[in-house]
Amino acid sequence: MLLSGKSVIITGIGPGMGRKLALEAAKAGAKVTIAARTKDYVEGVAREIDAAGGAAVAVTGDVSKQNDCDRIVDAAIDTFGKIDGLVNSAYAAAPFVPFEDSDLDDWRKAMDVTLFGSLQMIKSVLPHMKAAGGSIVNVSTMETRKPLPAHGGYAVPKSALGGATRQLAVELGKYKIRVNSAVMGWMWGAPVEGYINSMVANSGASAEQMIAGIAANIPLGHIPPDEECGKTILALLSDYTTQVTGAAVEINGGEYVSL
Image (cartoon, rainbow, N blue to C red; front, top):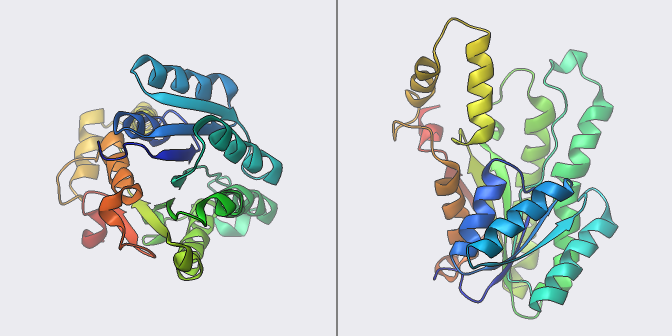
């Protein structure tokens, strides 16, 4: 299996790609430490993994707090003895309002999770990865390439995370630690389905029409499923990508090339 024998931490476990990524990582043979702020949800995902024959430990924590990051890492070490991979999927977004109407304190709070939360997780895993190397994947968004009006409080922290990815790839390479970005676009799963349903309720369009409109801008012709996007992240965690670092891998059905 792709990740057989590896111990992987995934933050930001939620009803979208976070959950699917955790399930797929376990299916690929990884021992998974999963973290989120919602205790019931993250423990439920761990039970799903255990029921499917995988190995998982759930930790409730807020990555904007260094002590919580340390607890997540300690749980992985205590349970599985090592850490081979880290996926920084946790993020926060400021309210979607135009910049001139924004409260920059909301942007700072988003930075605390999306950027500094990821950096704190990397600080926490670093002592354990330095001896044997490892792979870190920071989950980004195509909105860093294609800014949308009123989305600055989401895209700007993700853009900063992209800069951190390149910086750390240079600094941590000497330890055989790879650092890459996964640049996501539309992903079909519970969050996007909910978004489309809400748009349908406020417009005269059908869900099918809205989905077709989105897919028309994606060369592969469909909205990429959460689990398939997650599998590309698994490839970046695996030994098949040992020579890839500092990269921003486009996982958006080719929408990037049609911008």
